[in-house]
Image 1: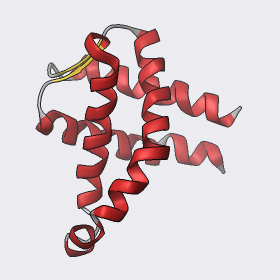
Image 2 (image 1 turned 30 degrees about the vertical axis):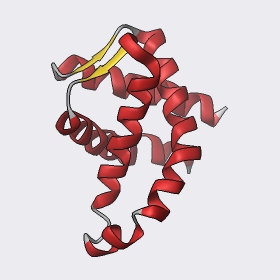
Image 3 (image 1 turned 120 degrees about the vertical axis):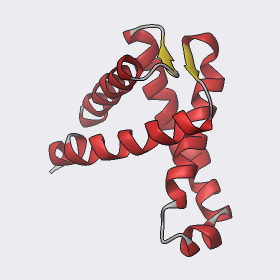
Image 4 (image 1 turned 180 degrees about the vertical axis):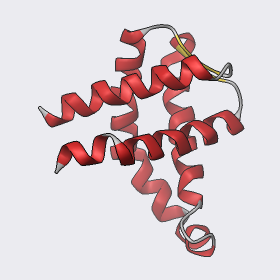
Length: 113
């Protein structure tokens, strides 16, 4: 049940980011739900591989490179969804990944406790 609540909250976060920024577009709430599911799958499968491969640069940047890895997984999710989810550029993906991490820290994490 917590996973479903987390998916819905992530979908709302994605919709809020799409509403505020022009370079981040979602076609609707259903697309946001699908993007949230795909993002969780990509984060479970691809992100650990990327984290291990980029471990030296992550250590050198004191963990800040993890935002780049999150931006890459977000762009991969957008590429998998096609026209329903569009991110214009890596900078927008990086900004969105930072915002998603910040919002999840204050909204999703307290719900899990």
